Image (cartoon, rainbow, N blue to C red; front, side, top):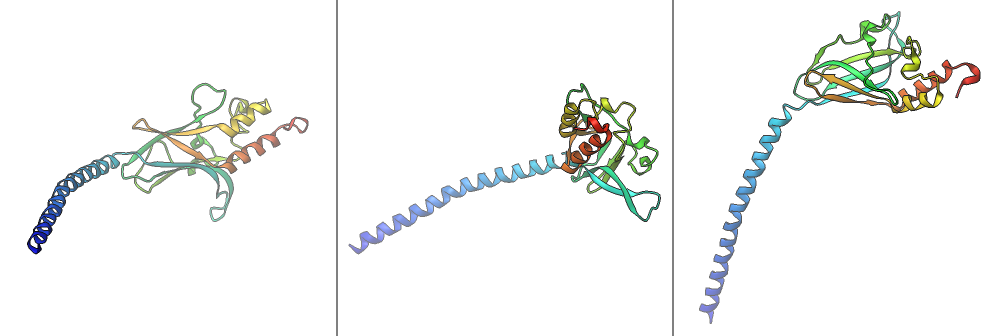
Length: 200
């Protein structure tokens, strides 16, 4: 009886090790797949364009370079990836307007000198900027063709739903995050620009 029990234990022990050995091959194969996938992802990641862009409210120096006292719309473009990116321009998409709209804040006599000159290259962690004076959009030659349409409803839709994209030399257009205070200020500026009896 004891001999039979010992035999049984030996067989169970052998069966257990055989089971572990069979799993070892599967684990080795799985590890190889994971390592290969990780290496492929890292190689692709280094070639990816990773740019963050935000349109926000800001302050820049006016007549006194020591004071940040001039409110502006600030477009900030930051490269947060290892691949250098060359920015060629930025475009506006407006409801009820066909095609793209290009504006050149670099030509503004007041703030143009603070804008990054196009085209510009940004490497990992570097930034580029464009600044619009707060009255820039109301002082366009034909503001009704851009955001400040004569029809208040059309103006409201354009201000609250316009989009901005960054153009790069590799063909990728980067989405710009438009912060809510920007749209709120634009709408307030539009209302104030209307005659007293026509304000929405």
